[in-house]
Length: 73
Image (cartoon, rainbow, N blue to C red; front, side):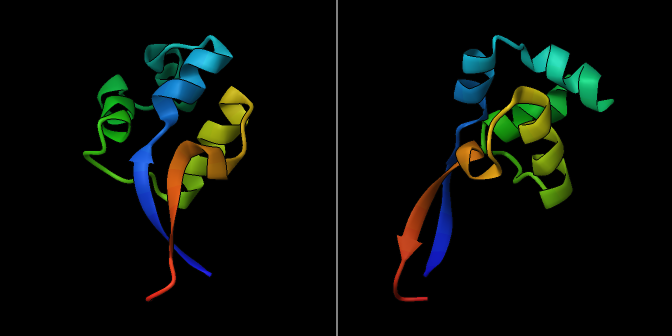
């Protein structure tokens, strides 16, 4: 089955982990603006970044986005 990405759930995962976007950015050595771009769906996380984010906040990669089944694709 194929999926489309829905909205980014990073903000929810950050709240669950108790970590701020600024703290996550510092852990990943990136600018906080990039994290906010992910949260606001202005850019999609590359796979390597999603792996690092999931590892840093203790979640699964699939938990970072809504996944919408697409049977037509």
